[in-house]
Image 1 (cartoon, chains in turn cyan, purple):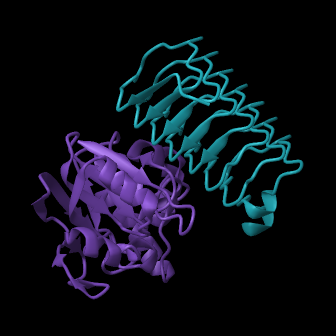
Image 2 (cartoon, helix red, strand yellow):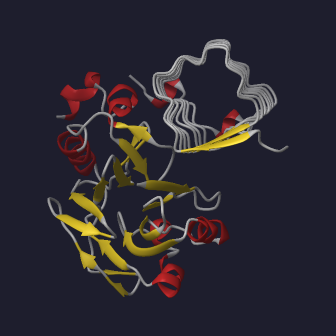
Image 3 (cartoon, chains in turn orange, red):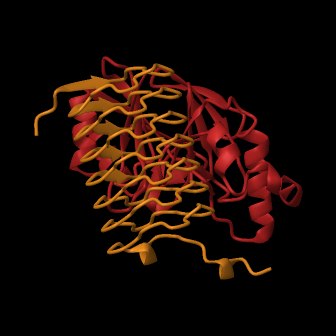
Length: 160
Length: 194
């Protein structure tokens, strides 16, 4: 699928992009730190080595995205849909991800340390070497995925 | 300044390239694997790799060095005076050097390996195995681990919180993110580690 546009080394820090439609764009080395794109649409877009930390992306659509080596720590992705995406080597540490959907995604080598993921769905995902240390995984759906190949600390790992 | 990143699925060690937007002399950090993708990245940006920064002499960070030397013959900057049979320009903590048109600051962080060096170039910190997103490097003993935590706090956490950390493994992060979400660096563990 051909990209609508390729944006490289652009700075979108702190901008309000709520509801914007940027489907099928490619973002290379772009900065979105502290931006607001609640309800925005990034279907089939690519994010290569971008900074999406501390953004407000509540209920945004990222279906079919390809992300690689992205910093997304501390962002609010509650209610977002990342279905069918490649989310490789992503820093999701400390994110808010209540009811966020990651179904049918490849999350190889990504990190969710201290992420709040209550009610999130990781159905039919590749979770190889994904790190969920200290994450809130209440009511998370891991059906048809491989959580045994991820790092999910068991309470017995830290005996009192 | 232009930053490029290479994440090979085999080996999963990050390699970075720093150069100018117009191409020319560039710095490559940790040649863990030299493959066609990395070669394309260099050539398509018209870079001439004139400096290699090696964060430490572990195979998964230097395996691509031999090929890189054959093609570009760069100066190697490292903690040891020899890497994979090649002479280096050895550096130590506190040194500031100019390489390929960029000022490079060297920071020593003890506790992972004796030759580990952290490189600060502009807004970027290349930490190798010392510090990654939510993780610190491995250590051979509990004493070394405490030394590593203490050194990271003393020499890295004290830097500008907005600096971008580019680790040898895993995704990018920032000092501020590590203060908040690195289990070994969070304030709640400070008393036990110090």
